Amino acid sequence: MNLENDIVYELNMGNMSHCGFDHENMIDYYISDASPFGFLMEKKLDHYFDNLSLYKKKIKIEGDGIKTTIVTDLIDENSNYYDQKTIKFGKGNFTRSKYKGANRGIKNKSDLLEQELWAKNQNFIFTEIENLPIVKVISRSGEWLLKNISNYKIDKSSVGVLWNV
Image (cartoon, rainbow, N blue to C red; front, side):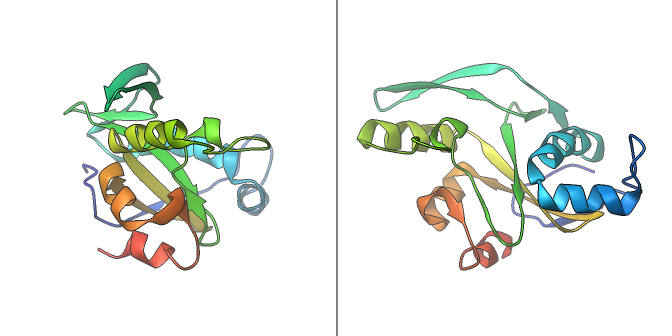
């Protein structure tokens, strides 16, 4: 099966037990801390979708006088880049990692332009984990997200827009 933008998929992760932990324990763990699941999901997306491959390389991009790099998660056969993002309890984001965390953020016009350039040059695969082992998946272009989701954040008021196809 090939991943296409703007289509909702449901993937069954199957038995999630591993490393001596049972299925339910691992589901509880991933629900409480979605970050490790994101790394696992990158590999699973490569497995589920025939047109995707893991791709952890720096790509230099520039536009409107701004230069930056993308370190993407996946690439397709047409050289489109994809960044995997997890949605948990109706919340997520497509903010660049360097702008997340304490004393970080988009603080000025230059940061904003860099974030926009970064988003425009890739697609984002959102994986909703609320019903593990079933994962709901949608890929959206950065352009689509910039037009339809404000402040790079998905919350309960905008999550419906994300999944509406």
